[in-house]
Length: 203
Image (cartoon, rainbow, N blue to C red; front, side, top):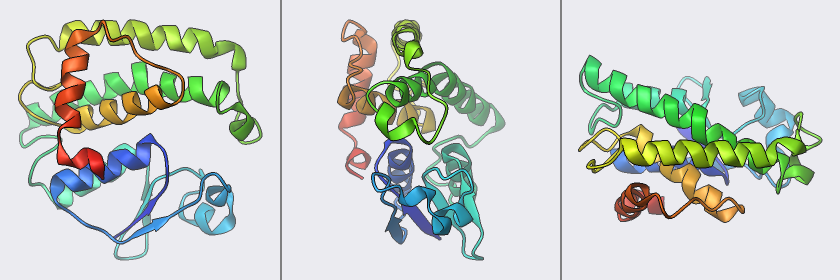
């Protein structure tokens, strides 16, 4: 396998996931700032022009962060970062989906339509007037999540999962692009510190 990597929170999700698995892959960096992901060689790997992309041993490619993580989990199941039973897998997928749809996607679009507008306005449909509303949604959902994880070490209780990796990478990114999150969410603050202490965050 080979990982096509770049800057950004989603590629970091894959790097953290691999680090937690103890897996090292050959890596080729794609220069997003220069638009290399929109050039024919990468579009042949991923017609969406997005990152990251995983190349399999047979030369085929898998894109979309969650799909890549699911593939890695199925081919390298230990340690489990999604789950070892149907119930564990359903629980982690439920929380990852909630985090993705209610928090991560809104952070992403608030960046693309705001601070990142000059980079993205020629690539995707951008709605600059939506930025403030997107940030409000993120703040509201983080407040809700703060209550949900009270008394838990991680999103799924004692299990560290893809849901934690996904949220961590996107909250860390948010803080770097002018979207600081409310430190009054003390359960999330404590959770964030626990995840930061993991060696995989350096990947």
